[in-house]
Image (tube, rainbow, N blue to C red; front, side, top):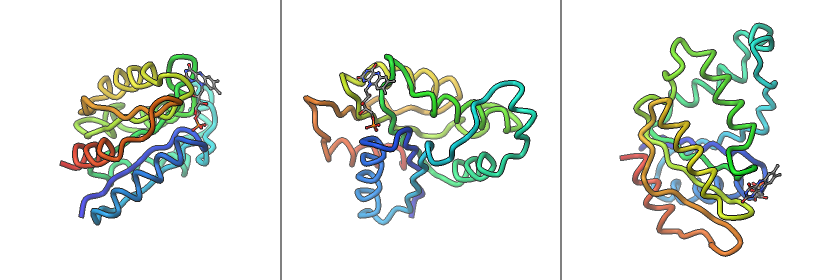
Length: 165
Ligand SMILES: Cc1cc2nc3c(=O)[nH]c(=O)nc-3n(C[C@H](O)[C@H](O)[C@H](O)COP(=O)(O)O)c2cc1C
């Protein structure tokens, strides 16, 4: 049984997408963990706040959840042609609290998905650059859902198989 971690970077349609992917993965017998990044309610990362939150429990347990998984899928809405702040903030925190900023994501298979108001392709490009930079093996195919494109169940199946292979 493989362990899939899904990061949800918003509490609306993207969290719903994360739950839809969870249901599909559970049907295959996989162990699935959905991490709602908004619910973590992390402080805004600044060099000053870093000193105040050394060993922050939420951050430490999030890091363990990432290290425990065999593959990850990130569901994030597009904000101003890029990633939502909650995702950037999360990556900043886990990078500074690791012994090596690439430790958590290096060589990890990552699938990218987005429900966005418009196209959603900019947030996919933005996440692709960031996760590649921290060493992840980002799947070539992504999932984009918007007003004119509904969720393709086959794309979900392919992404689950791709990140857990
Ligand atoms: C601050 C902000 C900026 C946004 N910028 C974009 C954008 O650049 N492109 C886009 O397609 N949608 C944009 N949207 C719309 C969101 O992507 C859309 O509402 C999405 O469904 C929100 O996800 P959620 O339902 O999971 O919260 C923006 C929304 C907000 C709040």
